[in-house]
Length: 230
Image (tube, rainbow, N blue to C red; front, top):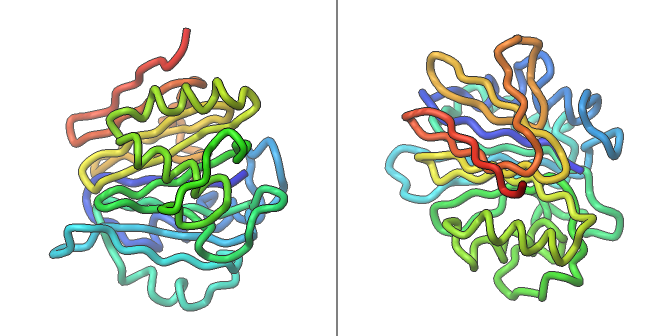
């Protein structure tokens, strides 16, 4: 299991999105409130964001716990972006523990994070995967199929591994795509943007829980939800 979030809107600092919320990713790395499997997310972290003048996102990933990374804490208040994807990792048993296994994974313009697990035996190995971990291999398959085929790709993987948990977050800097499959997601619409997260980062009553097996799309025009299965 992992915890992750995506932001789309007016530029915000990485600190305001990842470190400062009262129950944000920093707190969720050691005390998640809605995580059904695992107690800690201490096996690494990562953040990807879009910067002015760069067509592709930049990333900062680490195999250390988020709470122990003083360098990120010192820099995060001065890094700002209007599109951010961040995650803290709880590694699936048997998966590697290096930073290449930490989300977000990337392919061109897209960033992707996976919260859950999938049996790698149902996913043929790919040379373009960033790691041999299940999430990286799944990301490579999603990118190879094309983000436009996200829903059928998820449904096919779930058919091959009915026990899979396939919560996904993706952004290309102009929109967020999210899938709930086995674990919840919530979103909050604010005056300056939308955040989608594994669990609410505070107790604001405006947070909306996304039903299981749904595709969520966030654009500057708003939020839409589509059922993936009846």
